[in-house]
Length: 498
Image (tube, rainbow, N blue to C red; front, side, top):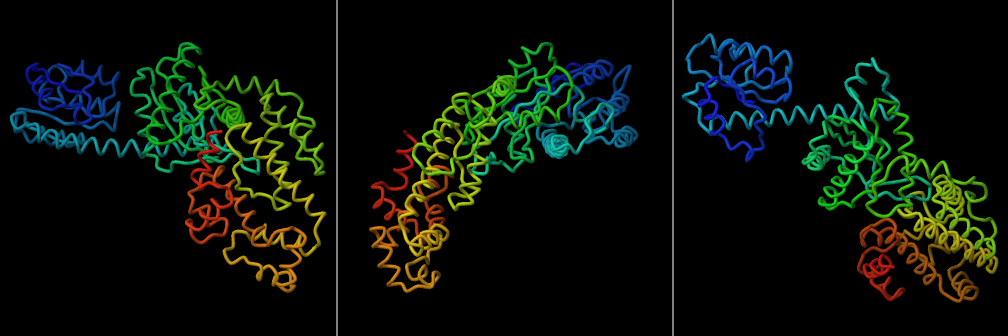
């Protein structure tokens, strides 16, 4: 804000600096102290540049009143007088700078302003980080949000709506959602600023990552006069967030909107949002949806009953077909808890039997998750049917390979040594019963694991090669192409296009 009772002097200061070129905005100009005080109360600028000699309220009195309202406001005093008493009073008010009017130049004023901007931005970043900590504490139930609590009143002075999303989320074999993270809070600040650049009705937008790896956007609007308008504004902000995140080479997330007109139980609402975000597995890419939509689907969800049970204990084809139909019913009805329960129960069975790991990502789409889960169960059933055909030494060798396939030193000799039988006997017995060598079986198993890793975990080829027991990605690619007819990159492209 610029203040001077001489219009020409006021215009001179305004014209001295190309404000927008350096990231500043002049939000107000005033020709007397009383007018300036009223404008300050409404606009709350970070920096005030004011003349000292004004009437009836001079610049020093204005500075004192501003300090009472906004103690962190930066003050720059201008005067035409070389008066030490003016300088002393300005310093008493912790003025950022004291300039003589006839000495003002673009470079001198700009130098001071850029220093101030750096101080303001650093201070704001620290305050936002503290606020993020309070919000995380509130979401985790560690902060009392009842009215009257100092922290809660500071955090939620008025109604705050929530947006919730996860970056590239997927369901793992444990039945838990996992997603990517952006650890740098400066990135979130930049995303928030860009997303609301054209939304004049947004009073505040704070983005933060929650302790559960989700992302929350706390939105406070200037005049939330109707729920419909709030929802409409939040939808525009959500679309802007998707666009900004995608511009930063991130996948545009599906965003859930929880709109409100009054201060309520934020902690309980967050818990509901966090759980019901699993509904996004049933929605298309870049979906923006209301909490009420997910809640409506959740409340209409049919009794879980048999649908949420894990995979059948028997490996019979008929039992597998029935279970496949159960999975289809779950995805068709958009049943949130049934899907999560099916994955958890089946995952426990698979992991216990040595098929898959807790970290294995099944996918980010309900149909994709059901297919991946069924394939794992089908593999287990196939292996169990095979198991009844083989001797205990062959079965033990297969089990050892499944457990140690990531070891590049794995060989017929190491397996035979572990089983305490001769390598010759194991080689002969294994080929006789399975029709293939132990090396071929190991390669086949490694390639099947590699396929899942390439599709589900989005790892680089050299990372996948290490995880399945190959020392170099070049050799792994050769083996993979020989087994599948495709280079790993071509395999991923083909599967992604299906």
